Image (tube, rainbow, N blue to C red; front, side, top):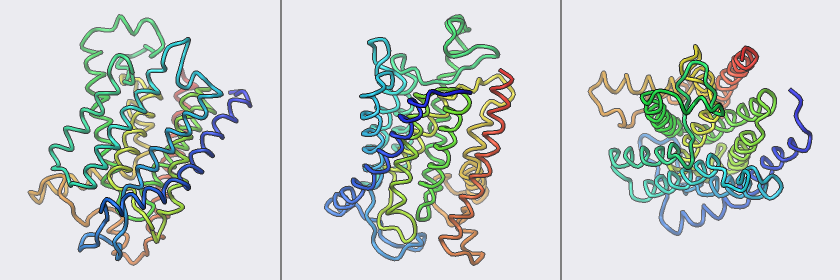
Length: 340
């Protein structure tokens, strides 16, 4: 698919602006975390040995926002379409702000799991509000841009809202649970975002989606400057919530129609490692009679550490597994779009 080179420049600009902004803003978030006393103190379940500031996710969200705002000066459709706000972009920005705030509060005050889950659900509900309209299409042959969507049975519309909220909350918690080693969550999210850039630019010609994904990838890459082992800062729940929420929203924008044979196949392949790691953790805890949100040291990265790999090798190994899933997702996406 041929893409206007000028549009590719905007995608690249979103990536580079987000990288630069994150590199500049992360030290600010570190000082803010130290001032507020938001530090990750080592204990028996942690693998780091020094108190480390959290709230790196605040810099990531701010950089993501800055990149989108700057690019929107040159591509107005990013935020405004035909004189009206671009609801989908605004939905991701507003929902992202809310869930980043939720995560930041949890980093500071250790919010009870049930309260945090309720907050995640409410943030996910923001996306499906009619003004924002970020939701799945539950249909066999309908496209989100088609007027036929308005004639779907009401139960399909309701199902689309429910599935979207469940998916967003699930992915948010998946990224949150995988955030256990220096650079792990940021690298996985970055690879996922780059995959969405590839789909948006190379297969769909959806430059708006690609710009959002590029800004997210840039925030992850810039953050790894401080977060790769040995980490100087952690993203905290503020960062893992923001990344999970935004990746889930971007996957919804890809518009993989639910009643087709690949329902969630593309995004599931992209996030295969954290999804299956989370699924095994839930099964493991249920078998032990533990709450599913209770922490343990049975995650994939913990097991690889016990095998004798150091932190860098564990993270790089999981990066490789994630990249393989992303490659399979690209192949499947290409086949799906070609079939359409």
